[in-house]
Amino acid sequence: IVKYSYRPPETVQRVVVPVNPSEKRVKVLIISGRNSYEHDWTGVNNTLRTLLQDTGRFDVRITEDFDFGTLAMLRHYDVVLLNYSSRWNYDDPAEQRWGATAESALFDYVRGGGGLVAYHSSLTFGYNWPEYRQLVGAVMQPGTSRRSPPGAFPLHIVDRTHPITAGLREFVWTYNDD
Image (cartoon, rainbow, N blue to C red; front, side, top):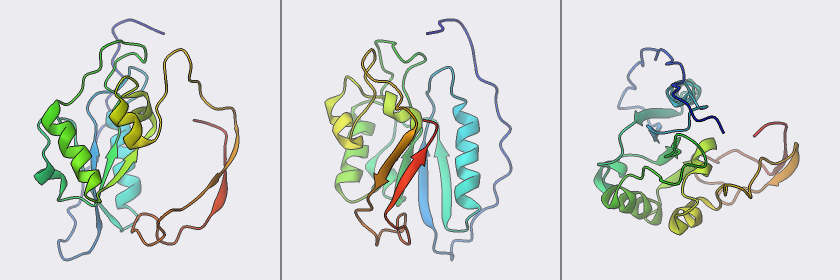
């Protein structure tokens, strides 16, 4: 693990064209703000926003400060996408968590039916936080987890009526990266 002062390059954010409120789009909130040194989270956030909004199906907002997040704030969205790691280095012992109010808000939001996507490095977050591990299904554990070897796995769609999964079919996902 590299342990020196480093900041990933900042990616210029394109100007976002506002979505007409009369359009019925899936409202997505990307929660970001802290990530490991090898992840350009601002660039990733911009790419995710572009990819989603360019489909014409999503209205995407980004917050890089969820420390004061509330359930009332989250209820404005159909799905939350986490792009958050909480550590500068994967093996840092201390996580930079959001605080009890914001954490409760996220858990209550999901319990109430709100959608949640844990994206990439968000699976390195919460390895010493059992409730988070249960919320996202699993996380990487320092010293024991590793990236999976290239291969394939079946993808099973649980709710085909949800706006995020509508139209998807069962398939075998072949991947060569993490």
